[in-house]
Length: 198
Image 1: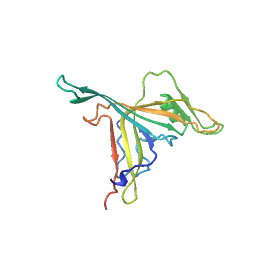
Image 2 (image 1 turned 60 degrees about the horizontal axis):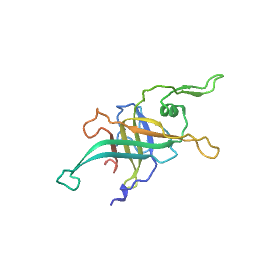
Image 3 (image 1 turned 135 degrees about the vertical axis):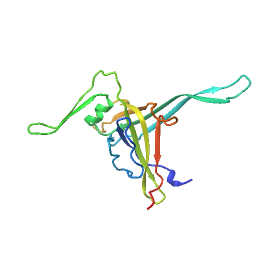
């Protein structure tokens, strides 16, 4: 076992328009901004929990006592966490609303106006998160998960409490992206194990 393969660290959550290119594994360092149209959802209060489950149909014949083959009939992938930052952009994204930001000016306070209505269409985005892997030289390298298409929504109550932070609990539901090649429709993972050689 290589101790470098033991990963410990918080995750950072990002989103972009579907079809956005992944950050380059070589030129975009761990902890750096992903660039392009990728936007950070800020700090989180709870661990990011990735759930991947599949449903399988077991095949048995009249001549067999046990399962002789299985087919996957359903895949469900979700990512859950609690956002620490209550911003207009975050709230509008999670509640499928719109955010209009007004800058400060003469006799005008800066503010975000978030509106949420009865739109039945759920917005989709590309999502990704990054965590830390320390390589054999002690250098920080990224482990990045990418979800080609998904939606984000609320995942529980927001508590406004004098003794605790107000978090925004969210769940990201991952969709199958039929534009991807066979075998790559749900997600991709980049595990950087060493720096580039000189």
